[in-house]
Length: 91
Ligand code: SF4
Ligand code: SF4
Image (cartoon, rainbow, N blue to C red):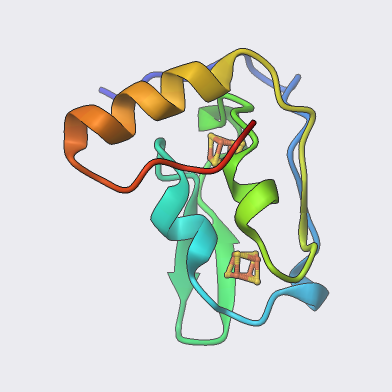
């Protein structure tokens, strides 16, 4: 079972036109909100999985993602540490 945040209140916005498919958002998102669609574009799996940590927005080099980051950042850092993944940049 995956944990969802609150339904239909997530501030996450993704501009597919700006995405170059670098894959950074997939790498840093602690909740699997982004997946790669082929090699050229990211795709949202389920917006409501987003915890608004802000890691994707701060790590996207092409300004394709906007989100109002909240307390989710601390949670994202914790999850990354537990999974042995690189910590997202979200200060
Ligand atoms: S980090 Fe930005 S440019 Fe890179 S795949 Fe994600 S949305 Fe696209
Ligand atoms: S704000 Fe955090 S949880 Fe939401 S999509 Fe971006 S990296 Fe994932």
